[in-house]
Length: 286
Ligand SMILES: Nc1nc2c(ncn2[C@@H]2O[C@H](COP(=O)(O)OP(=O)(O)OP(=O)(O)O)[C@@H](O)[C@H]2O)c(=O)[nH]1
Ligand SMILES: [Mg+2]
Image 1: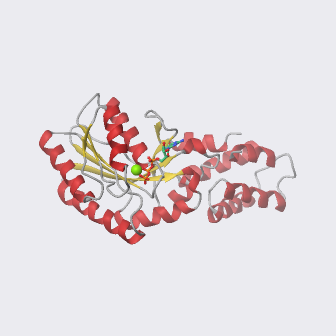
Image 2: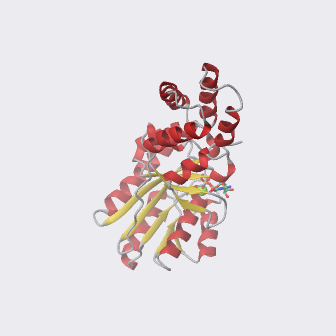
Image 3: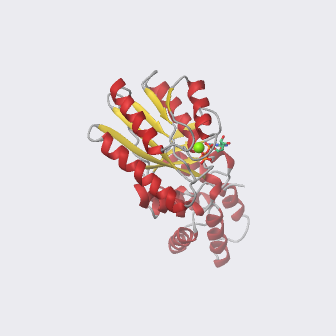
């Protein structure tokens, strides 16, 4: 059951009492806003004392959430080379959403100049998985075998994209290595390669994929990747699979991450550009 429905139920009991505010705080925590923000919002609402009706509460919350949220600037330029690096722990939806992004820009820019880089050389079958997407979408893919150097694959992809005049490189990465330090070191290396190679005139974006069903652990994941290479935008995957969905608010508040996309299913078209107002309205709708 989503936050909006829970808020509606809240008004079947007593209003503007201490019990009411405590319950409200719990509902916000359960919606993944995190304990700190839930408390801060509830305190603000308590002080205003203007929450006798559901519509008043929703209007106030809507305003608070929109103050904290940010939409990422994801503008790419089809006249130049754009490089997108997909980041995230294992299983969150990097590869699937990379394919959705490829499909999105394929439609947006009608056609070619898009290349996939099979930068997950760690997990067996990861190269094949991306290869299948390339085949289905009729896109070029740069790959090597499992176990080869991910940085070299991405380097080759960018080099070939430059020489062919391609417009977009979408690079997959591994979500798991032997341990976290290895993962961070690998990503720093890949980031360094792209950074040096891409240089001026190239638009380079690092997209962190967060799984909506992860809950508050997403914050630690965000810290890890943001510290390692810097995150330009969050893609919230599996948004369709959870009634919670409030995680973007603490992500925006504390690591300060803006959202770019919502993943809403497993198909190629199940990806929508992030719109803060629409997101907040959905979150608060009964
Ligand atoms: N319902 C739903 N499922 C999704 C979405 N995005 C990805 N998935 C599913 O999540 C599962 C994992 O997706 P992958 O793209 O393989 O995840 P990954 O991060 O690349 O995983 P690793 O390569 O193992 O690190 C797959 O079954 C996808 O179909 C989404 O937005 N909604
Ligand atoms: Mg993958």
